[in-house]
Length: 111
Image (cartoon, rainbow, N blue to C red; front, top):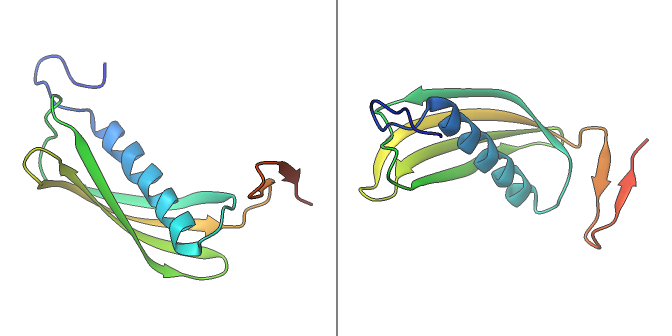
């Protein structure tokens, strides 16, 4: 269960994972290409508890993109009342070594 039993609040680790996933998608959307990425740093400020019976909404924006690094801002809201729950700043490494992804769905190992 993702919510703490006694308080009906969502565990903060779930918000961290949501911010990391949304940030990764923002990198790919900002670069407009599918590529291997890795999270270098993710800092989060929790503003209030997240209620376990409400949906969450993460809005991530790619603030700056270089050939090797992407800088992301992410806000997490409670969808029901649109109140800000947490903010995050993340840095991602682009074009990491590993499997390369291609638009035809086939994977090719990189050197």
